[in-house]
Image (cartoon, rainbow, N blue to C red; front, side, top):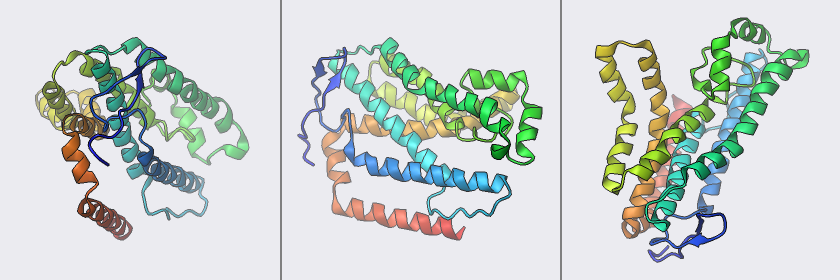
Length: 279
C-alpha cells in the first residue's frame, strides 16, 4: 500500500464526507475482518466449552486460540478503530468532536443488546430447568443482592462478584463502555498529539500507577480498579497504534507491508499457538 492511499471519508454531520490528510486512518478497515473472525471464533468456542464444564458435561478447550486472547484482540482492535474515527473527526472539523453524537451512537449500538442479555439470563434462561446449570444457577441467585444488580444496571459487570450463567461474557462490554466514557473527552480536549500520546501511555500503565498510589491509600476499591485496568491498557495499545498511523503514515506503511515484517508476524503467531498448547 502506498502512502498516498485514497483518502477515507468520515461523516461528521450525518451526510457530508470529510477529507483527511493521510490514508492510514480510515472509517473502515477490510483487512481487519479476518482478525475479528478469529477473535469471535475463539470467544464463542471457549464459552461453549466453559458452559459444558460448568454443567458437568464432557468438555475440551480444543481451539488453539484461548477465548481470553480473543477478547484482548477485540480490545486492541476497538481502541484502534474508535480512536481512528475520533481523530478523523477532529482533523476534519478543526479540532471539534461531537461528544453527544458519539455517546448516543454507543448507547444505541450497545445498550439494547446488553440489557436484553442481562434480562434474558436473570429472568428467563436461569429460571428454565433445561438451561439451569446444576449448583451454579442456585448459587448465583442466592448471592444476587442489590449491589450486584445495581452494578449490572450501571453497566459495571466487570465488578460483579458472582458468576451468573449466560452472563460470564459481558464483563468485556463493561470494560469498553467505561473506557469510552472518558477517552473521547481526552482526545477532544488535549490539543496536541504528543499530549494525547502521554495520556494514552499513562492509561497503558494505569495498573502500575494505581497500585503504587494504593500502597499509601490502601483502599480495596482502588486495588480492584487497578486489576481491571489491565484490560483498559489493552485498549490503549490500539489507541497508540492509531496515533502512530496518524503521525507516521509513510513509516508505518513501509513497515507493516514489508515481507520481513509479515513473515516474522506469522512465525510469532505460530510460536504463540505452540507455546499455548504446551503450557
